[in-house]
Amino acid sequence: MRLHVADHPLIRHKVTVLRDKRTPSPTFRLLVDELVTLLAYEATRDVRVVECEVETPLVAATGTKIADPAPIIVPILRAGLGMLDGMQRLIPSAEVGFLGLKRDEETLEAITYANRLPEDLTGRQVFLIDPMLATGGSLVAAIDYVLERGATDVTCVCLLAAPEGIAHVQEKVGERADVSVVVAQVDERLNENGYIVPGLGDAGDRLYGIVDL
Image (cartoon, rainbow, N blue to C red; front, side, top):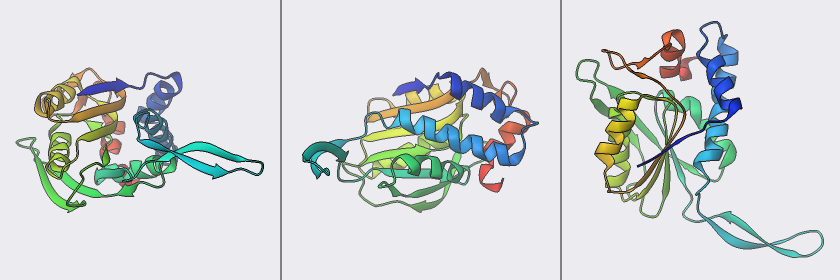
């Protein structure tokens, strides 16, 4: 598993404002959208392309286009839905699938409650999107889900991550597939309830439920 922290001054600035409990909801939603678009730019550096011919107003020219089969974007419901627009803005030709996972607050294990994914993901680049990588349980379950359907190239896009979650994903993925995790910020640790520390407060709760804002 490869980890990429998008350490850009604008990203750090937007994450700081996002996490400020005084930030109003309309600004919060706008920041999420902007951050996801910036992260999508980093996450799609290795998107597969092929050469193509186009007719310009003057001459024929050789360019590139997204290769077939098209990538698939998979929001982890429900909070991942709030990140979908930012991803689609950069790769509008991508297919969209949905995976519903929730965390058992006692065991911290992920439970699947919804699935709308193609049965065969062979040859498809998969982009899993979820605001937070905390314990890593939900993301591991989502990765397992797409790998079972034939995916071998998976990129996970998250806004915040904890070291424990990153380590858990790395351990569980192993050498089975080419998996990348792209995040805006890695925090210090998890608390005893499996939430990211420090300074989550109101912003953390809002990230878990951004589709409701």
